[in-house]
Amino acid sequence: MINGMHGGNDLCLDIKLDLSANLNPLGMPESVRRAVAVSAADWERYPDPLCRELRGKLSERLHIPAEMIVCGNGADDIIYRTVSALRPRRALICAPAFGEYRKALEEHGCEVSVHMLSEKEDFSLTERIMPEIAGNDMLMICSPHNPTGRVIEPGLLCEIAAECEKQGTYLLCDESFIDFTGRAAELTALNFMSPGLIVLRSFTKIYAMAGLRLGYAVCGSTDTAGRIAASGQYWSVSAPAMAAGMAALDEEDYVRRTVQLIEREREYLSAELSSFGFRGYPSQADFILFRAFPQLGELLLRQGILIRCCGDYSGLDSSFFRTAVGSHSENMTLTGALRRIVNG
Image 1 (spheres, rainbow, N blue to C red):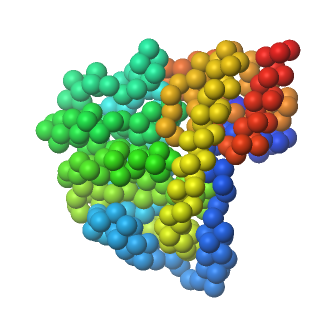
Image 2 (tube, rainbow, N blue to C red):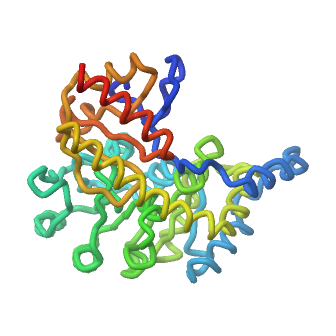
């Protein structure tokens, strides 16, 4: 993996197994594929810029007014549009973390402060962050966290949301991977709704829709939602992406099967990584952060296997790697390659 690139982007390499991008190993649901194909009849017309039908269905599912929901061209799009709309002057992020948070903030002239997560605490977010919130216009957090897979437990999340409301700080909580936990209803920041809350969700990972690009934000006020919706490009969501999202929201059994698969395979993969002498960190997402030796990524590439080298994450170095939790056959392919490397 080339530092500075997201997972799944090394298209020029001869890759037999790509575990650098954290997509659902079950693949895109067939109902979604069919919906995209049927939507071709609408491709000659501009899509609804307000995504009214999709927002209506999300509203029914989440029990949130549609006026508080904004759809976009993937979670990344929503991040940039949120920063553009709200223009924070000072913001707090965690490290290590998804690089687009800092990039979006700095591109809009925002001063960024960093709360360092500790390896000694398995990179969990703790109450150490509480005194750092004051003085910031925005706090960006992630649950499950990328690249660690750690969730923010409800008690702490409640404290953070209350402190942000007290300080007048926007709280953006990225929940792009929350459906993989099987605990979304319990863990979501939507349980602590306030005017300054923005909860980010993505169809990309859980429904394996990376090429279609679809995400959304649930905002704590219609004013915030309106400002975010008015920023960025007008037709940000394509007709096929909207059709895919509508179909995906009906795939409840698919999500249940995904959670069961991920739990089982994450346990298997964690045990295997430990048996090789690598240090894995607890995860509740569809990926695992682990520590090995810096040459591991290149040695796997020689066998046609791509994982995410995490040396470009702030707070990590080239001995850290992130692998997606794949199907059992994919995970066996990875562990077989690791066994050959470790055994020489």
